Length: 425
Image (cartoon, rainbow, N blue to C red; front, side, top):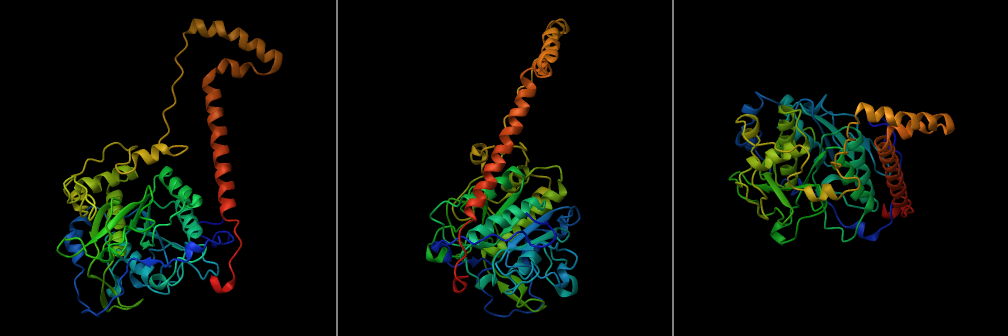
């Protein structure tokens, strides 16, 4: 792995899997169809009581990784907000290159400052980590090697220290296992990173929730309209966890423009959910990802009931930040993925080590002599005196090293596929 905020990470050969040629839908999603007035309202900021929340927190101290088609850091509202990031494409141009404007729009919804008439995000003091893993944004394709690049992107974001990962992308379910991606999501869970992904924009066609929102450990976000109703295009399914504003969100008609167009899609909802989490975490920096997520669920509009359309309801972060509602609960238990996180090897929250009972002074003195004799005889007495506690620690360290080694070896195996011909890239 190369520099986190320096040059792009080491390139790996692409995986030749024909199924990966399926098209990608960047969920911003439905391209703007009609231009709107420059003063069109950012209704979601009012609905979510942004001004009230900004009196308490604005996302400071929180880094959100935007894994997308790049983020243009020259946009006025994002100047000084965007880290260097990385471009994982075969022919990298840099993480700040955004050919469609999709990744820039998502970053702006999260952390835009509103400078010079640009988009104002819900968490204007959050930091954006751009990770470019596809080309063309909304018009892009989940081409050969995209799954491995997505896995690498998540791994990169975790190692770079992002607390939140925003995945405003979707495609049909894989239909097969992809070990590198599963390992990336698992490592994100172990490192306390919160991941949001859009459910997809195929609800009107009756299509299910798309990948990667279907993956364990990923919070699937649906979209609602200005009336708070589920958007017809928003894909539904048992994976849906939360909903957020996604319809008629005013965003630039093109990169750098102050003219606004209404964007529709679960991409917008995902970015707004990520920004909400950033605000909550900024206001409660000692919380874990589990506590942030639990507070979001408890204060959503579903009154604790979950359905396939909006999950536990529409997010309402002001209830947490302004009103002081939402019990964060157990920091080590994920409210959505408890069983999944416990099943990982090693698990997200390992079982606590059983402490060795205290040895009475007399017993310690009685055991001291065998230890000394052993030390004099073969140099191993120190381990005998220490007992099983040190041995358990050593065994644990060895097991961890072996696990990491096998994980890296497995990733290397996955990435060993031959690169496809140039016309298939």
